[in-house]
Length: 169
Image (cartoon, rainbow, N blue to C red; front, side, top):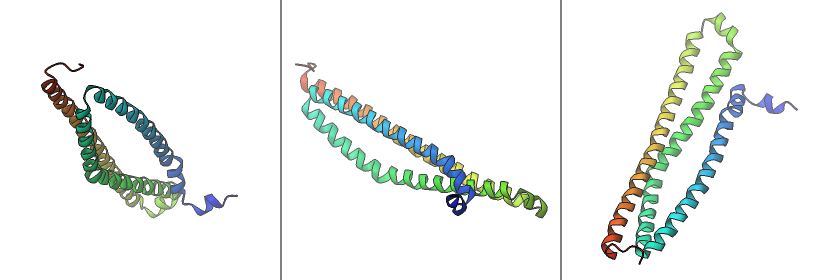
């Protein structure tokens, strides 16, 4: 009955109870955002198709190119930093639990400085990986917004030029 707890390190259990729960809720939120953004994109695409077939084709081509570039360059950095964050959370939880469970021994052997330095190093790794991941995530949003608004502006200019100002004719 207790084999699960006996076979796991206490730090891993702390991570499972705290970090993994947060990660799971973030994944669910990401799934909801994916559905919301997909439906919004489909609505915009239908609206642009209503305005101009060729503008729609051009937008799809730019969207595919954008997706390939983002996937090739930025997602690899996101995945790499996400893995570093997961490892740092697990390592932090293990060290934290070692500190708590061995506090008497640590005081007796006067090794508090060693554990404090060990814990601080892991927290710095976690901070660095979280900062990098947040920066890369924001970079994708900035690039996405720039491409989207640029396409809207260029599309509107082209639509105006080709229709002589009569969009819905």
